[in-house]
Length: 534
Image 1 (cartoon, rainbow, N blue to C red):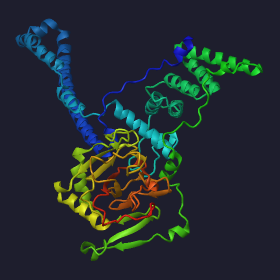
Image 2 (cartoon, rainbow, N blue to C red):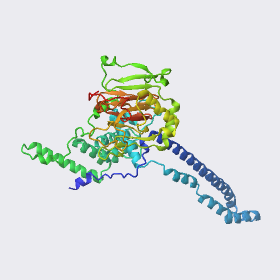
Image 3 (tube, rainbow, N blue to C red):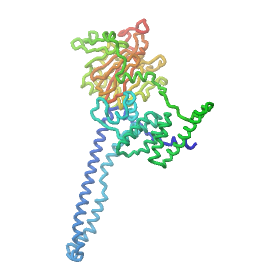
């Protein structure tokens, strides 16, 4: 039927190549400076155009006065030989000069600068990625569209608002992903802002077009019909809406007839979309994970809390820490998660960040099928790897980890520095390789990842916790601290309770660096036990 064709006729935008700016707040700051440079260039262009117009205006005023006098007595005016000479000179020479001035293009400098800078601009996929991040933050932190649109987020320093066009664009991004739930939310928000009188380039007809279809896809036929009628009140000739109206009325008539007839064929209703329940999620612990991100996690019993302590740690009588022991705090008992306070200085943090920034690239994960590194939508960040030999600070940090953990870092992976982007996250995962991934670290030849050391190199205004869904633990970022845990039991078996995630960054900029320590070299530092789960 033609109605089926009309209802899906909304065009989808195309996306281009992906630079990945949205995956790193650190690199996005460079765009601020780029835009500032363009604004300066634009102002220079405006000034040049104003100067040019001022010259033309002065010329016009002068000629206006002159011609006003001359036209009162043309013969008497040109009877003066000086006036006659100047008239010839103006028309032969000076008007040509004015013509050249009018035709002079003052935009060359601005256009040239814009062309150079454009190669560093984000592209369509960056814009879509940032939009999806907003939708992810909305779900994870239970935010309504009005809260986000008005910029009422916790910890914000620079409040910002979403226009009706912005809300419309977010709805379109959700639509292209067949995410009709978020399409309805954001098209509804755009419509409310337009109803409140906001002046916008987007019109209610376009918003209602998407909104009615999104509502229909979620099974609310009555509301879809109502919205379509509202659209046709604004634009009676709207082709798709007229087709949809007939289609909706046809479906509703069929449903009415089917309800009247006890023997009605149930297949008659199959063309009507059913209201969708909770979509099948690839992440089984999604609800628990998001609750922990919001700080709604499992509260440890007082009895267990009493077993958690703060202490000074000398690294098993390590000479470096006898006089200045490290401050250690128990964050969780099983698995044992320890936080070290004031363990990396601000100066060291800045050096590590400066080393990493030029090499930041989209963070990767191990593909269990191929054993190779690949990018993934569930990890939104950029990372870089730093070797100990390239800077004394990195070498010193590596040795500090060895001294405090008692583990050999010579077989560890390089220090990985990560910066999270808009809504940056790393969904629940294991750091160690499971039994169904025997070749995950085969190329390294150092065995499995026995332990993880994670530095927090920035405070985060809101969000960004490290959470452990299996046990309900939440560890919040604090600049200058580090957390440590074992991924494997002493027997070499994986500790599945260490499955963890980096929650989306709601507000702020999150920098971390981590060291994955491997089994090889630890044979005498952490001897194997006979019990599988010890």
